[in-house]
Image (cartoon, rainbow, N blue to C red; front, side, top):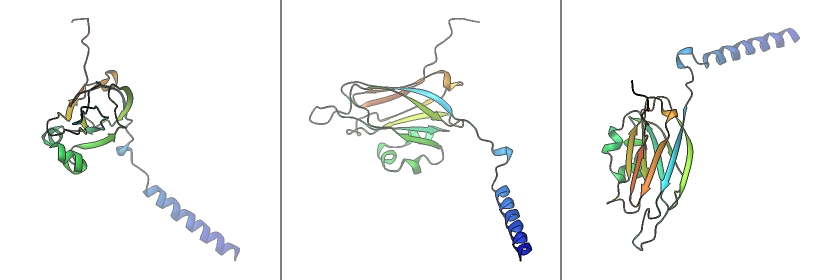
Length: 170
């Protein structure tokens, strides 16, 4: 009786081992670490002004893309209501930030996937018909060395990643 239990236990253990081996990854799908990029957000005091003349906070969405074409062609309403579908072919990751207040300056560290070639920003402005609510930038060759800047002015959002030229000329 004890021998039969031991045989069952060893068969069960072997099966569990085979199942776990089947779930393991291969060396071809090795983990790729994310890039840690500094993002500086700066809003003027007159952002997202409503009809009453008062400025209001604005929600931002940051997209990591392998191509900016779909984002650049998309309308405000399509991105607002169905961004995942509109950007499906090029979307790598996205993040919705907490509301940016008028006059606020904020720095965040953004984990960017290695396959991302572009960062895009979408601002949920109330007067979206006349606003410039989206902007994109191609990531530079060594993106962790150069911070990204997001400027929000009145009804416009812009994203840049300036590269300082070296003072040393070859």
